[in-house]
Image (cartoon, rainbow, N blue to C red; front, side, top):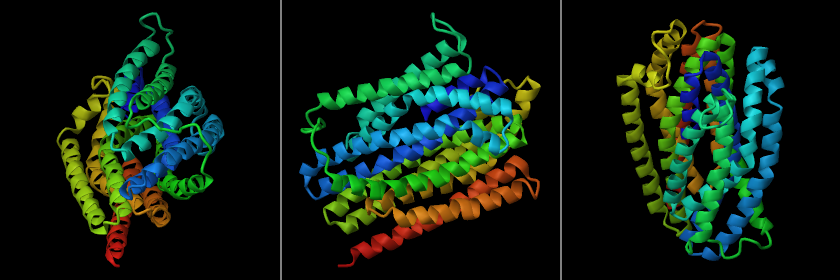
Length: 423
């Protein structure tokens, strides 16, 4: 997410058109690739349960099967992204913008195999209680991405001047670098290095990873596709609306990494306790995660409420430029809606993460689909177009869908965790 944020900030200085094309291209890529990355989130579920049950002999087999699943999932992802232009034109994007976005995506997908393998290793490390390694590699990658962005966008330090496509090139390079560094770090750690990485695949585990993983991807996809469609609809309103939306959604999505991380931690802790047959501890871990997450999101919401203009100016928009000033004003309006957005978005993310610890993924996917599309999209479309509220209407619809998902998923956790207490 930090790489996407850096790309957006750098593109803001190039111009409104570059920000719209690169911002939309990056959003589409990370949303769709994120859906496929979440397929291998099931690695963390099975490893956490195995560790809780003190059945560590299964860990290598789970990781092997997870790597195979990540590799297989790479190719439909590439095919989907490579052929994105007809879809962009179908939803009404201007032909010039659709072409620019497609060019951006076709460069960044060069890093797709790396980001999928990296996802498998990330979930493995989380379940093994070694998230610090992910953090270190991510920070190194973030700084490298910023430097490469600058060099490739503007053509300094002997690098070619690629304009907005330089941001895509930089991100693809950093994806491969991060994956290689993480693999090396795992191989050098006695506690993390798999004892038998090259061995026969246990297809029973592979099937279970798929059974748990695709509903997780489904939850992620119904939410992220809603945001992607919202961005595409913003593009039909105008370039200014799209640029403001990209800035606002990047701010919201960056803050969202916090409850998403808490949800992942809750997934591991709840899964560990359920594997150890300690349902009371699992329920307690789930409620603690919700409390921590809501506290964090209340803080980020307060920052957005107190300094919306300052946040908008981080994206190198010039308040003295007439076009940029309009974008800034719209970002400030959208961030006022984002204050509510933050609280419910955090709650639904953690609720889904907690439920994964119970191996409960299918029903949450159904609840999420009803919330985001049955309610959220309907409200967003109605407010934005028939009722004429424009960008603000779209954002109120998104907030409504997230609030519904938060209520349903947290309610589901309360029911499932109480049921688990019964002998």
